[in-house]
Length: 146
Image (tube, rainbow, N blue to C red; front, side):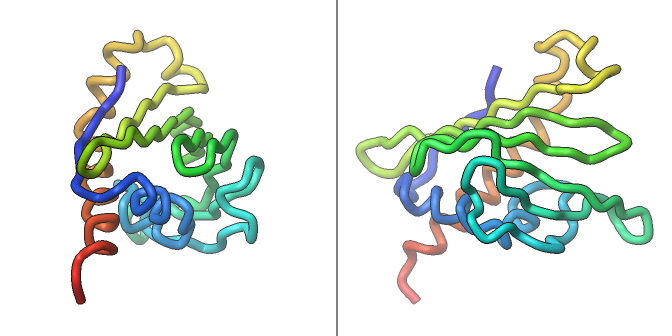
């Protein structure tokens, strides 16, 4: 199951936001700050070193790029230990005007892997919907006149 959002931004504009690791905390709900971004981000195996939570309860961890199809798909492994690790796939589907952004998230570590996929989706859908709204706004802003 996935969370989807249509935006007036072109796929290239959305991809540019995804490819800017320093913008990660701006659109990912729960990420509070970026500590470092590997030079070749979003190349396969590179990482965004981030923190999650609200001060003073902030945990430092990272998100790793697992697979990249330039301009179309980015597969991530997001860690927020002790809460676990999740697989996140972001796909961009070009439309006549703009694109559709699709986000798929699945738990990779117990005990969350024991939760049925439909329940996992229901749990993360509100957060992912907000993340896609933020991502779209950043991409749309890049196309608006200054």
